[in-house]
Structures are given as structure tokens and as C-alpha cells.
Image 1 (tube, rainbow, N blue to C red):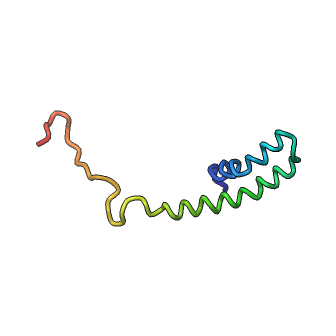
Image 2 (image 1 turned 90 degrees about the vertical axis):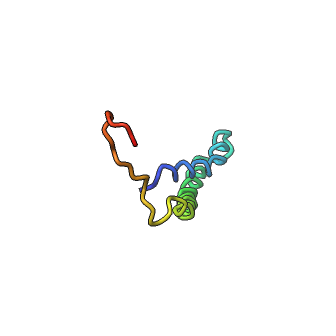
Image 3 (image 1 turned 45 degrees about the horizontal axis):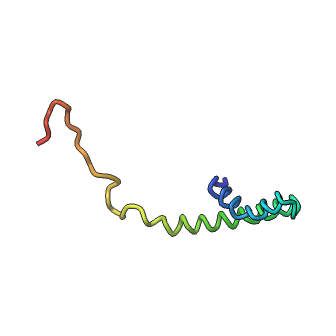
Length: 78
């Protein structure tokens, strides 16, 4: 399944060809070919970015959040 971010990035990469199509400088088949070529390139670039930034989350061995013990509303915290 292709992520929507990949398709958006591929559309941004092929935007100059789309603009040239609007100006009637190139054919629609060339625009589609450039978009089809841009999709796997965008997928590879975004996968590399996700791989590099995957370790920037929380450190290993640490809990996901601060443990909190719930207290009733009528008791005042100590």
C-alpha cells in the first residue's frame, strides 16, 4: 500500500512537468511518466527519512510516560 505522503511528495517532485503541461509545452503522457518515475523515488527517500528519524523517540528501557496514581477528587494531594 502506498502512503499518501509518498504520493504527495511524488506530486511535488513532478510539479514542474505538470506546470509545463498547463502551459502546453509537453504532452500528458510525459507528465504521467514523470509522475510514475517519481513515486518509487519518493518512496525510497521517505523510507530513508523514516529510517534515520526512527531512533529519535524515547530512549530504550524507559516507560512510555510518567506513571500516575489516580486519587479521588474529594481527597487533597499530600
